[in-house]
Length: 322
Image (tube, rainbow, N blue to C red; front, side, top):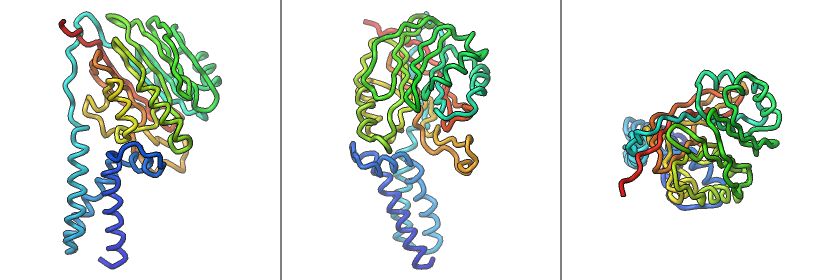
């Protein structure tokens, strides 16, 4: 290994080490750390093959340091791929399937979205980045007939959200988030389930507003079964996201089902320039509280969007015995 390559290898090991510890440094307003955290665990796991390469070329110290960082990254990420125990199901209720799609405000393939959702046939459809043009075209599609109960808060750019349901819905309150947030009760099988549809600001462009949005969402109080879907612009590796989950008693459906390392962004198939890389971070989530059990969660392609959509099947949990 040449001196220049050795220096590059040490730089890679150091960057991996910083990425490894960055999620545990608390809430920092430097945007660089926000970006670095979004690269976890992949940035830290890069140390593992580096350790093997260093060992084969006789660079013992580099191999040891990289090996420690890589092993720590594996141990940190491993719990996210282990399915977790769910609350016992309420035998008097049935499954409720919810699809969430970030539509991308500039989506030029919006007319292809309804058939993609129709194939999944969910009970509830939630949208982020719902613009007035999107809303008109979705309502004009055959999909609209399946979902007569709708709450739509369309807006320009990425601020709009919406909820369509085949079951009756009742709108509940509002929030102080910078983008529109839908809070509604869906009268699903076995009783109402509160569904919250949100979209935070971008931490790269509006970091303070992003933190404020997550704080506001963490303060939402839900006494009964509840699901929160949307584009959080944050992954589990962001302390701000974990704080929201702790404060609200939320669990992530992908982590609950052992899919915690799956990714939803950037899914740039809408633009040929960006097709060379796969999604590397999950910022689209379905969160549930302790009154809900997650039965299944999958991802799907949203035509024209830079996000993958998600479909989560939940069921009310059996009430605790007094």
